[in-house]
Amino acid sequence: MTRELLSRIAETLYWIGRYVERADDIARILDVSLHRALAGEEDGTAVFAILGHADGRHDGAGPPTTETLVRRLAYDSADPSSIAGCVRAARENARGVREIISSETWECLNVTWNRLPAMRGAAERLGPHSYLRYVRERSALFFGLADATMSRDDGWRFIVLGRSLERADMTSRLLAVHHSAVSGSPTATSEPATWRLLLEACGADESFTRTHRGDRARVLEFLLLDRLFPRSVMHALATAEQCLAELAPHHDRAGMTDSARAAIGRVRMGLEYADVTSLQDQLPQLLIALQEAGTAAALAITDRFFQQTAPTSWVRGGSSWAGV
Image 1: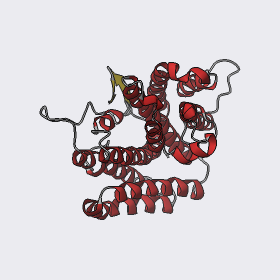
Image 2: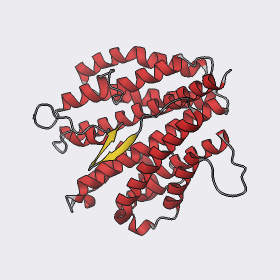
Image 3: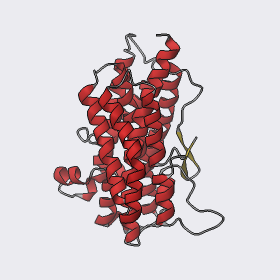
């Protein structure tokens, strides 16, 4: 195969990993947001901010309703920031590399996409939670099948690399929006429900409870620094760094010529030696550093491995996150 074809395959696999992980993350965030909306605690604006939208308002209207939230972020297949859009994109990418991925992983994505209309119909009758649960389960099934049925070669590494960078990115943006919300409310940081909802959105509630017995003072430590929890920022960055080390081994006696690995390594080492007792005070700087490292790593990965001008990335604009 030509180098251009190999780079296209690598890019396709990388984005499959990112799209499937993004669908899973959006489903988790949306599920928690809908529970909060039912309790009258959230209007949905924060969810749009997390996912890179300025807000969900149109023509000077008020905050987005739960119906708007679900329609735009769950069902709209034309929007790459929605669940359906991510599943469609992952499936279309997978169709082009069916000879590279295992048949089980292709069938998982194909079935997931083809069943989404039926799941939406059921959700419109019974509520969106069944749709969101279905997406979470199918995302877990895809990554489980990839781990179980694909050789640990470069193809598998690009999928895991995409998943890891997307996971670190989404967790850092969740923390950024959460921090912005609680900064304006001094009592919010002490409310157990506030921290528990953040953990649930990150898929970390049960693991955190078993590890730290519900000590909410250690929530930031767990989501940012825990080396054993697979959805923590630290674990995601370490996994991405390992994938890059295996994709392009570094043999120089000094320095680091791999820009992507250097960007990830620098921010990971900053987290590695962060002062756990002052994480709350350091959080704004840490999150900005994480977002900048993620953007730099995505650009460097594109330059090194893909025949592309620029990747889709998330950048900080003013007080919100925006996709470009």
